[in-house]
Length: 244
Ligand code: ZN
Ligand code: FE
Image (tube, rainbow, N blue to C red):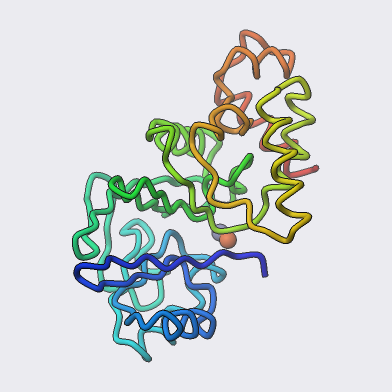
């Protein structure tokens, strides 16, 4: 399994959340090691590799489960349903909620503005984006544009280590993109050492991730469609990636 499961700890209130627990055992171990008590599960979407540990963790800790209102029927054990425009406080740390459908019809992101941390599940990956299982290219493009509007220093805690494969694909789309070449060299070096390439940073993603660049003149030119519509271009590169 290549899932990342994150713990977020707010030191004043001692609230601790796990984001998208695929499984429970390593989460319980990590909590024990740090002496933290789990108070929340924050889910981005219903896929098993994101909610698989929900019920076990709730049974063991009594934690509160938070997830997307748009998909509450598919989030095991959900207690609190949220949607766009709402916020949720993990102790003194406030998360702004974004609805970002496309990968699934109910997919949510949590943005902790003060910590510059974005938990975006399977919507935005480093140099890539999620597959369109339940949404249209237009929905996904709009979701990605919402995330792209966040500050450049935003750290992107995505749910999978797909960066290297994504980068190989991105280079076929924009072989002359210098920022992409630089990032890819860094990624290869990290992977060689067995290190994580996540979190990535929004400012770098804006320069290197083809799925965030479908409306940029350089990318449009690179795909030979300088006057093309962003949604159309996005749809086409997403299709190409599916077959890559
Ligand atoms: Zn997923
Ligand atoms: Fe996933």
